[in-house]
Image (cartoon, rainbow, N blue to C red; front, side, top):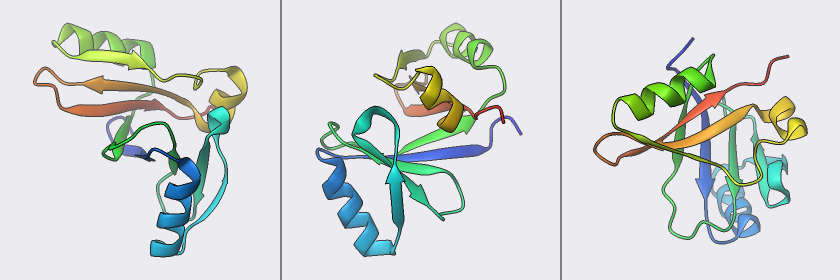
Length: 119
């Protein structure tokens, strides 16, 4: 369904340290994720991951969209901004995890768009 929470991402300076922290805190298990510096979190109910190179990041909440291009155009038309995620749109990554865009609404609040993989 469009607009439902479809992915949550936790950023930190070091992906391995984030993996260790959340793994110990919640008992989560991980598998390699996209970009070589990230991990997918197993068994949390909503697809989720951790990544490095993002000091002081707040958790990113991504909302499901079926047509990523149309949703990106709507964000811009409504006064928001959109940026690509580095290294996240190659075909292999998109086939496993889907496609993502980081956005800010017209007041600067961050959120994300996610088109899940087409299985």
